[in-house]
Length: 112
Image 1 (cartoon, rainbow, N blue to C red):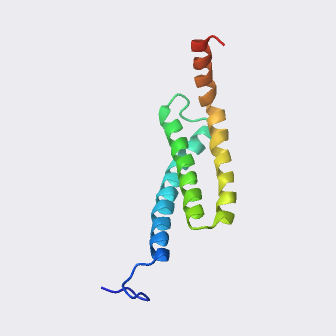
Image 2: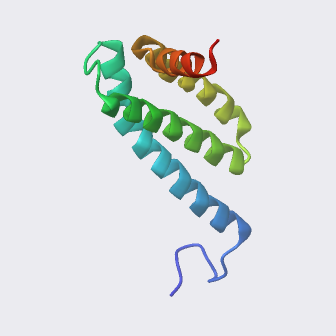
Image 3: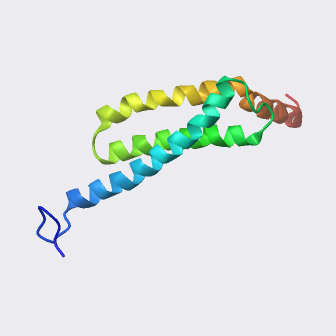
């Protein structure tokens, strides 16, 4: 079975393009699902729900997966601006006070 433009041998470029497609595709799926958590945090919906924290984390994981995919493809100049997409996730965690609560618990345990 031959594909258009190929001679039947999978080259390095074909494998790296396939890996890029899988990693970037999974990252885009995670990013788009997790964006609902970022929007919930910005609009202060689901205040006490852990679901929103998980969705924000899924958004961040999707962004990181896309950054990794572009770096693997040696397109770092596209990956560098994508790192700025992590900023909304950090602001969403700040609005929810996720890390403040955890650091307060650690402070109470350690006596700081």
